[in-house]
Image 1 (cartoon, protein in one colour):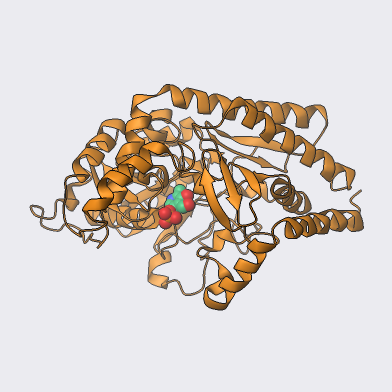
Image 2: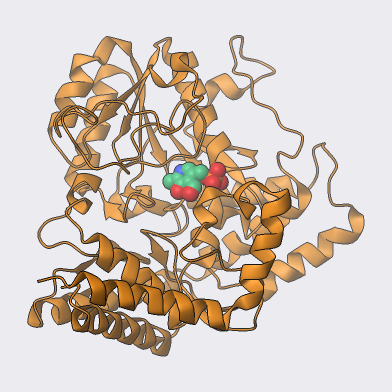
Length: 459
Ligand SMILES: Cc1ncc(COP(=O)(O)O)c(C=O)c1O
């Protein structure tokens, strides 16, 4: 039986300890608040009891403004696959830096980056660069609509594809009810922000993730559907992998109705395998979107696809090409940093074997511990992507996560931070620099946190 007072004592005790060890983070954030909305550059940086202010990051560690050291499984939201501040990226940036940080023109660093990109990813013959994952998914939808001449886009409930109006829909954050979110077989489109243009999100239909009813809904809209966008592993939605058969059927059915299959590989790209989720699952989309890892720690977005799918981006020869432009697209520092990372990843495929094995070790040890000790918790994910959820039973979609224990979720996040783990919310990542000792620490910190939650009556 949960003892509310004991749980509150635990959570507040953690908050007090975090505050006591990081007063500078708190005061910097309070200063920020005077001049930045909510004192943060992105809503996902807000944290209980206040955001961490990072002072520096190196390898598998980050240090906050108070010089507290954390073992890093956040990795800048998955970006730093070689660890923080890798030498190869520093060298690449140093080489380009004296020649200028920005031209707004073509330059010689684009080709090696684009060539490596296309060589590594099976479904990418051509790639266009922009500045964020949000931009990339926006362009992918535009390309799908322009190519097919159809108005509708389908996304999955729980899928996160950035913040633009077309896809800021049905992130699955709210507890499912028939009135608000619809039944699982036929989720409603739920706008995730005031201020979205109705004409944008109302052309987005929402599908159930890992559920066969998705295919029926696609067929019901077949002649109106321009494309289906899917994260092969829903990242922000809870690190929930799509089934391989599910992705294969999605491929078959979109091809059959002449709609684009768009893989949002902003997280999975160059992370699950050198060729991303499409290589890992052996399912090749028409186009895919990138960001994160591919930019080597500098801001990047990219849209890649088969030559046929990318036809309406051949602006100079194709009538009816889409509008795609950007002052900073293909910035020389970004392309140099990205090339350095892709080179390293392509030269050392063993690095994936090691990262994936460490992910597997974490999941299997935590799940064994949870089962043996009857904790209602489980670690899920795939490869180097992982998260521990406070639910029992199968997790197929974000709806399953709403069965979780809110106090346990809050407590775990506070205990990670108090005990020196740096994680995101709902998704965490491994990098090539992590060692077996780091994974042992990750596992032991999780086990201790579970025990502490139980001792305070959370479970
Ligand atoms: C799968 C996915 N797509 C798109 C985005 C948006 O990318 P960005 O934050 O670079 O705009 C994200 C960001 O987390 C993401 O996880």
